[in-house]
Length: 609
Image 1 (tube, rainbow, N blue to C red):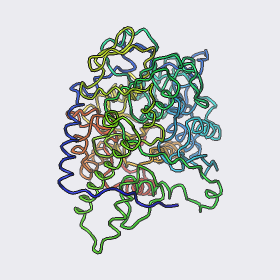
Image 2 (spheres, one colour; image 1 turned 90 degrees about the vertical axis):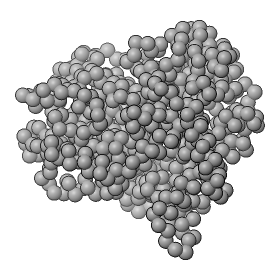
Image 3 (cartoon, rainbow, N blue to C red; image 1 turned 45 degrees about the vertical axis):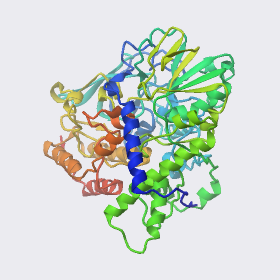
Image 4 (tube, rainbow, N blue to C red; image 1 turned 180 degrees about the vertical axis):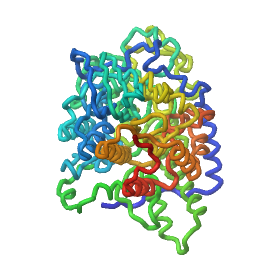
């Protein structure tokens, strides 16, 4: 299936100049000097609620574990599950997975707020579909379906055996003499692991806005990743929030989570205040069922081909006249651009292509702002809901019920962009724009530690390599890795995620290839009798130089964006970007580089012992 380009109005230079200035003004209204320091972190004693508690599953009492193992994987989300899967494929049997959650699922275990769905095409996002034979029910699968699938993959890989749930790692310390990592946990465990894989995810640790007086509020408070259905009524599978009929609710945040949860809160609460600093782009959802017969008709390798198409449509661009098979908000700009370029007589220069792409960005954003006017009755509310920034300055969303929710008489938008946030909280509510609003409950859709300091993101107090060197100190001025997956001075320790590797629009596929590569290295070490492996100084530095020599500089784009987790809340001093330092030549080139490295068979750039 392919789709036609969307109809977007033409854009001339004068209109673009007007929009650029409007974008700058709107960004500056939201900049806060404290950037990521404006938040209350999970480990902060100021936190008025326990951000790490598990409302979904009771903690089972167990004895501390003292054991020697071959591989320890930190994290039971997709990174940990895929690591276990590939380790099994590589013949590595002695694997344990630990996680703070009560089961496998990661972000899908924790996030059970009403309306939760995948934001990406399910046939791209859900890994191992060909290997398992699983067919998603819809283009954007629901959260419970994804969690069940993740747990089924963990069962197929035999990962439940030995898994330690409701267990947080408190320290990783390398023992050079014993050539093992000494791992301690909050359950009193002492685990000596030959290899450790950091599969602890990108969207892992929740945070709260540092609102003055947040500790004074005497009503109910919870984070969306710790949704309290005993208070709201209903369940994730059946989100009928019947207990809110006499409640005044405030939700802080209108990102991807807020966009999905707000329609349900608006439907059931007596009164809902939606507190917004920066609006999201919200397109139509078009969540069609997935036809199992269509999946069965596809040739082997169909999922990787679809992921390749998504990468082109969302990131790298379609060829002139190329067709879009993904057909959603992520691919609209490149879909429209490919159609436009295909109609040209002469091949345009690269500079002209980039100019046209920038113009298409503005044209699509104009369409999305018009959608607000079409769906929201009150002009002032509609104006506040319009996104004034470049596409991908914030995570784009899609939802058919979000904008109509603001037509409900019980729903009120509180725009705090001009004051850069809620002024303060009181014992009975919150103050915004000089007005106090009494509420019974405040729900925080305030996101996760994504571009804050690494120790806050991972929430592991101590990671010490050779001679007690701290990883956090080693990386204080920037990541230092080989291929984004290992680091000199930290033997047998492997990383996943957005550090210094190729960028893939499908995060699960990116991690899938990371852990496939890591499992190969561990399998080789076991097969050849090596107990210790780490990059050489020279190989690590060569990779860092190569990454920085070939990178696509996103700092200027990030500086133009409204503050969000994508750009470290506008922190220009640290130049943070949620994707780390991505490999400039692109995902396909990075994957080919890894395949070539493995095919050589000599573990080039690694010290083996």
